[in-house]
Length: 157
Ligand SMILES: [Zn+2]
Ligand SMILES: [Zn+2]
Image (tube, rainbow, N blue to C red; front, top):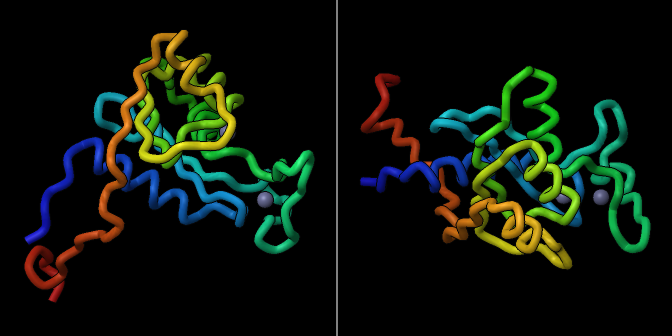
């Protein structure tokens, strides 16, 4: 029988699932914004709506960074803004430590806790989060399998 995931594992698994939609081969990232155990918004790094994808057109490099995509954290914040969901006091579950720009956006949006399992190159996120009083929790990467047991736990036959 599979182990029931705790809340942190559950929301991180959702962030990992969101990352599957990423379109830049240099990085796949997922972010889930959560408040009172409810998902407010999700995001992955992808192009501006209607624009071509890195996967199809190649990356758009400036100073060895791909600048084509909107980052996962930004996309989650933007999705919340478009739908009118307050982010104040939310937690952000992200597959990796945010870049400097995204960390500033998360802080300014009112995110109070960030949960990650992997790091990111050359980011000032930890310094900015510490200064802003945002809690950083590093958890082990949850299992990649989704335990949907059709045979035992579904009425579908
Ligand atoms: Zn790219
Ligand atoms: Zn970023």
